Length: 355
Image 1: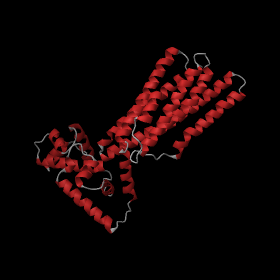
Image 2: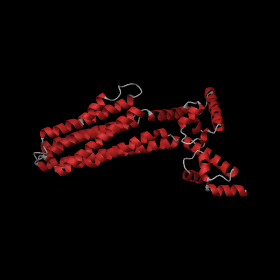
Image 3: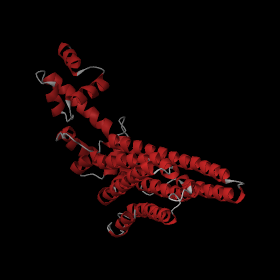
Image 4: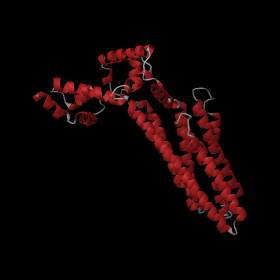
């Protein structure tokens, strides 16, 4: 834990405007690893477990694990929300932690026997579990939101974000499952491998965080900014905005004539670069069509081209049509074609030839 904390202090980039969100998230994560470093040192130094003082050991675990978990979860959410967290996401952890500390202190002062303190620790453990569940649910919602954005824009540049998030969620789930054992167990045969596995999960999580932040810390910000600009533009167009729409339509026509929509692996970023347009203008233009999002618009254009090829070139196989129209595989082409037309490519071809 000390090594991870030092890495985050010394190795990561110096703060600058572009990485401001990542830097703030990094400090939150660094606070979590620093707390764990202090916690492990105190456990070793005080030796509660080795002396059989389980109640004191559990008290110390809860005292440090709750704020550490909050810092880990908030650092993830902060980065993936591009620095915009709901008030409850900031306050839920500290408020529940404050309540938990009060319960523990009150039990020590007022409990008549050791069992009263144990009961308080069980109650705080339930609060801790509820806190983790709330934050994990929010993280899964964020994960689904990111996947929807990727599918919406056919933006494969976001695959790195999704892979990082999947890995991080896996590490967080491991930590959640191992926490009760770390907090309450006193059997070395169980505790030692569990602690090593927990440290490995934290180490892996932090390294994923570093790699993601250094390489792709601004991926989400661009998408959200485009969405915001598109939504904020008024429905009533000024002359300048009408000129922008004409510019977009001319660029789109030229791009379609050059068959840019049929290129495999197409993303919205590729499209706007080839059209020489600001991204938010294309986003707004598509929002004003019946397709609303880039992926549905491109799929419609590709299916229309597939219909033409099936009619003009009946000798083409489905593999050839899929390749010509930019679909990644024949099976995906067949699935999308059926969803759009209600027929398989072969059924459509036979119907067209008969008609």
